[in-house]
Length: 282
Image: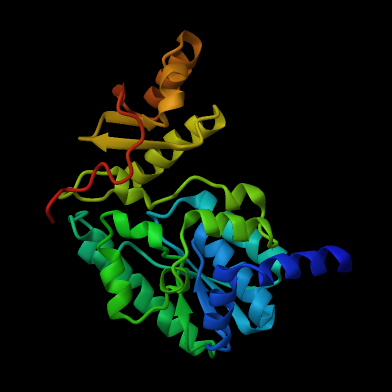
């Protein structure tokens, strides 16, 4: 980015009230470690922190676990390379408390993973760890937010009253790849499985491969939910449901999914629904 473009960016960002609030919040911390998933929210938070504090005063921490989507780890690496921020990948196995995918899986997972990230941040000389939670996350079933609160992890977007639209607008002014800024909402692969059943890594890889197949076909907003061992229920955005039913497209999906070991392949006519495997009332 040349000097003139950088000055225009600074002028636009400094004139945005939500960006001003966020900048004050971050500068009051001095240094910041960001739990970087590779999705839009945490990527934009890291980019804005690097803009406000300087890249040398930021650290990106990414969890690499069997239930994480591999493409998001690659996205996290790309973001850090572009920003020049040091990136530490923390590898972990599936925590025993979530091995059977309990309804409060998200709470137990966040408690385990963010405790690990906090310790790594401290070891690296960073007192503050932040995540990309924002105000639009409040309307979803997210027991993991309670764990983040208990651990006193910072959620700058949430604390500054910033939601998805503002995050995307901010991301478009920062050095984050646009395909990451505008990427569909992501979630760990455990959200595709039924509660109360032992999590098998082989099934996680099958689900990831099935979703990769759909994305290659242009279905960018997709989920493959698994019922039992052999039934795959596909959720797509409403506009994509009709296209998936067209002859050649349907045949390609069926062939690919059967190669992955799914005997029954269904298309959810209700379309994509965030958290559709959650158990209500938990």
